[in-house]
Length: 157
Image (cartoon, rainbow, N blue to C red; front, side):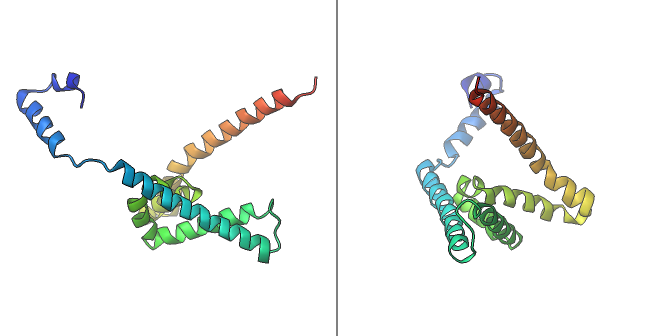
């Protein structure tokens, strides 16, 4: 906490802040980064394995194997979320499990599972899309802007 905020507190509150800061556990940034790297890399490695299997045994080309690979990763993520496994992985790995598409699927499935007692529409549907809505809106807006820039830059004139 910055010193400017400490000055606005009473002396007892200031002392408490100092004690709390001394007792706060140190963040293990290096270990957390390594865990995130390992788990994120493992998720990507599994995705690459699925994609190569699609190409080799599924009759897909390199260009067409991506979509089913992502779908399988999403299904695996939702399955692991429903079994409570993905949350434990996320607690251990941090952002390494949150950044890939599996993390987004986990977040949506978690919201749906958490609010299922409120019903399908107002519970599952409404709460699941509280997270997905902003992601879809900003993703669509970003894609539009990038497409517009590309169109302007590649026009022959």
